[in-house]
Length: 389
Image (cartoon, rainbow, N blue to C red; front, side, top):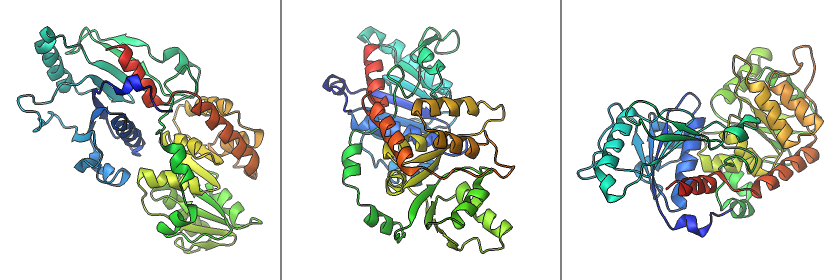
């Protein structure tokens, strides 16, 4: 999955813009993109309105811990770059806005003036990309790569291109570092678990990263009264709060207790991206949410359940179903997803189906193989930009 050598020969300067909306998933994607571009020889500035979360997502990122990536706080007005003598911002080759966040107008105005001043030297306009949300719906293939001429403002006359991540060769692909297979092969599960304070025995290991799905309580009870022991590795934040609330409100049990019948619970500390990936490798079943962790669950190759971000207008339902279609999910996995995401019966006592671990794992690993045969997102981006410079 390494990019062609021709794409390595021309380092470019990228400016990536990211606005943190609520759950830091957008920042997680932006950071993975920035750091993976840097490993391909690119120079990246990541503009973030709330960069403080990088302290736990990628420790050291804001202090220059990754060669080739500079993190800049996105302020209004933009703060000059002290490293750029005589150039308050510094000209770039690629502008990339994540998830429709709209590049800062001040930045566009400064960059446009730089381009005009340097036009006599053969400078080209930057390639402008809007990196969209991930979806398996059919519109993604139709819209991927489409141009959108800018008709007004400081960028009038330029063209923005829509770049869609996706699951097919007709889309932009998914973020995947070239070292993934080697890293997984070298992974020592038990040593890693002990490193985060988990002493696991023969119990089934299940990670939980979710919002507050309505079936969570009944599912926890199913595990507590199940026929085999399960250790639930609960991520901090909303997942941990939801689990603690269930046991404190419904059973009068100390929510900090780690023993509930056949269910053992380990409440995890905050994990950086690299360690979260390893959590998914270590577990027999993973519950993930949002976009970034969905992709990482696929790469982990283990059975998983996706809690898609719920939208008031119900737009998440067709998005979920399209993904399950692409995944070629077996009936039990489809049923579990529908109930977990509120698309199927559960309030009337319908229980979640027992995971068919072997079938689910085979499904995920076949999907992973299909993806590995396609270009990853960074390779696709480099090719897309290279064709336009």
